[in-house]
Amino acid sequence: MNPKIITLGEIMMRLTPESNQRFTQAASFGAVYGGAEANVAVSLAEWGFDVSHLTVLPDNDLGKAVIKSLRKSGVKTDLIRTQAGRLGLYFLEVGAMQRASKIIYDRADSAFANLDPDQFDFEEIFKGVDWFHWTGITPAISENAYQLMLKAIKAAYKQGVKISADINYRRNLWQYGRNPLEAMPELMQYSTLMVAGETDLENCAGIAANDFQSACVKTKEKFPKIKYITTTIRNSISATHNQLEGILWDGEILRSKNYDMPGIVDRIGGGDAYIAGLIYGLNYFEPQKALEFAIAASVLKHSIHGDANEITVEEALMLVEDKNVGKLLR
Image (cartoon, rainbow, N blue to C red; front, side, top):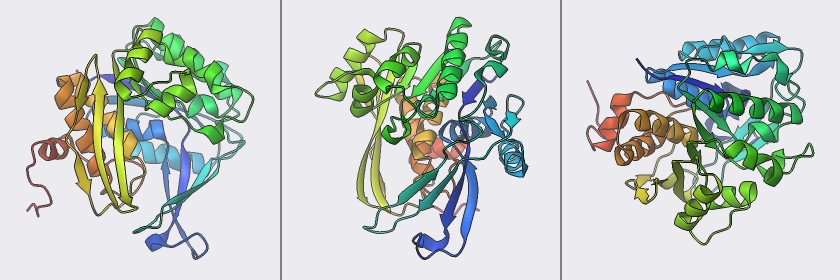
């Protein structure tokens, strides 16, 4: 039986000018729906996991459109609640060559930010669940979102659910009064798998180190339940040419192959594709192969428009094995 997964987080509408136009040139915008946790849910559902996404959406046609998009990818929506309010937005200007991409957020006072954390019975929700995934974006949104996250994590841990946390420190989001150094350690302590770079660990847990290995050792000392810590290393040569590799710490440092990506189509969601690949890989492979699968999934995401990674397990494994790369398959 495939693992049962729950992801939790806000979903927004992404609006992007066509053909690499700048915001100041755009007369129309393409719309897709996504969020860091939902992007992970889509990947895992596409790969056969039993996945439910928990969120709060506005009680209008935009909320219905989000639900429809999740169901299209095989993500279950029974844990979604709706209420009065707005759907968060973000605008993406896709860069090219040496011109960087740019994002403008318009997500304040969304239905998700104003959710009621007591409307979810997490003890019931996590019965029979194998894995729970969250990110540091959610507790940074509002006090209500923080309380929801705390209730969910504690309930998941109590029922023996494995927990993955993508710390994803966003300085500009922490505006409602809580300090991440005070809020995040209580959430991070229950994680089995943590996605965090050295900057994330310093800003969210006060862990300062000279290198990733030292940071991981200190993190394990502070949060002994952690088994794996992971991050990616990205070399941005231009907006459309990056190099990418993954690092996984499980007591020692494991490194993936380094991939050259000279023709990026869309890099948004690349990190979400990576952690989804790692969750999948750690359920089926030994750690080194899990890491190689994860970075291959992320690399392939860079060739796909939109937030979500619509690739198959077989495609990622073929890239790991360097088979059929860039070929015309008939």
